[in-house]
Image (cartoon, rainbow, N blue to C red; front, side, top):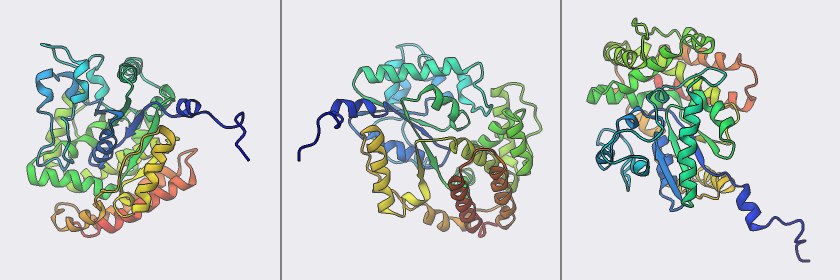
Length: 359
């Protein structure tokens, strides 16, 4: 019996129901760049890398070609420079991406949008609209958006909002080892900076206290000055305190991710299950029509286990209490789905196992 043409959606109707872009909400060293690279590889995608990065304030057309992965980044090889897609938004002889402000580069955790948000919304909307005009789908890879995720989801309901989650031990270890090996303190300093600049928010203060974080003694007089203070602090910070700061920020970001993302990418599972990778591909295809191939994902859990002996300066056994405190913090928040709490509990159990070998 033929299908009833009245009840069957047309192809154009199906297309119009699809999400018109992808916002990837990730954390530093979460493997979010690799996830983004899989989407960027698609012909129908324009992939914007780190649209909130303060690098964009001073970016020039001459700088774009040099913005490629370094040997120490741990990022996948890229067919084009990181910031290639921003060329249409740069002017010859000038610096800065059109519409970008340096204040966008610090994540915020207030419940309501701040005074900068209208400008941020207009900036991202311009990137989206000009990309769509060329028949392409914008895909944004963020590292500074998780605190503002509810704001962005409300402001851009036509986009698919995807959260990338990696267990905190693996994620922290990736940045800590970069500091040990290459004297790059950025990823150790970043949690201190974000927490310190948001410490007047009651929710952030609660996470800082419950995880037992000691912030840098410098008062945050400005974002730039405090960033410098945090870099100095990170160079001599005790490992236990650095990890506490990381977990405090991680659980705050997880809390925001719990607020109704369209898809959750579990990095720890992705490298261990072909079925899970295929399911993620189907999830993207169902909501956006994009079909990224995740089958080449590395087993990052095994890599964390292999690097355990190199993790020095941290008493991993004492971190169990931090994981427990962070999970307790999440459980006390209103409206968090039980299944998400269980996912975070699994991450903390995994983190207990991985940190056990740290000395």
